[in-house]
Length: 278
Image 1 (cartoon, rainbow, N blue to C red):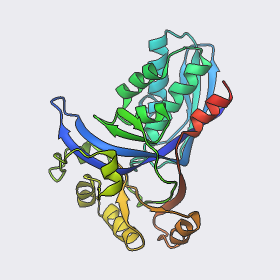
Image 2: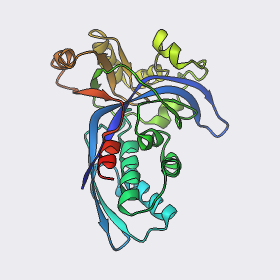
Image 3: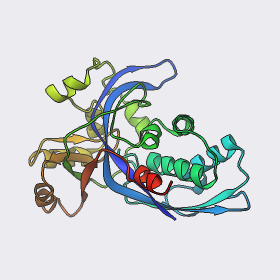
Image 4: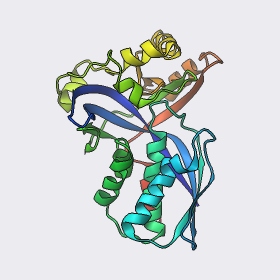
């Protein structure tokens, strides 16, 4: 009854334009990692979608996992319901995609448990209506992304371990994208260029300008290893070839911050489990 919802890192994030509807065009590389939330999911016969536990600061009706379950229920015309319990390990507002991953796990698991029969493309479309990061978790692989993040291509990257530092603040995507400091005209690059040339996170100046704690954490980690912001959140990270090296720097992280060492994944553990239990 317990299902993983893995986090992601944005190994880079270039904002390449802004659409007429207000959404931003981007290029990024989504790296799945083995830091996971856990969803407890049980089928109900009464048609109700109930969150039994979850993050206290998020109302049940606003929880993306609950919203995803209700969207699937409507789309598939299902009379069954579900009890959802969300145990958070992925920090909210950290740029690691926790809420989006929770939503994708709810869609994929309930599609199986309810016998809806929707394919991945149909689930992806439901997920995109909830958030631009949901499709990569529905697809379940480390991916090169374009558009608003929904145009996905699988990509193979060297196995790495990542030290992730959370400086204790939550950053909202909307406030970052509304910032006058945000660069919105980065040129498009190729996947080969990502491996051969320098990239960046275009959101770093805006986030560090608004949140001094993020700037401090980024500066601290950069003294030990090249570091970067993930997505539009508050978490910063650095890559290591060996877990032991990441753990060595993690032991020095100031007590006022949280830190994790996570392994990069080519594929989602949720998809692996769904495949085993098919």
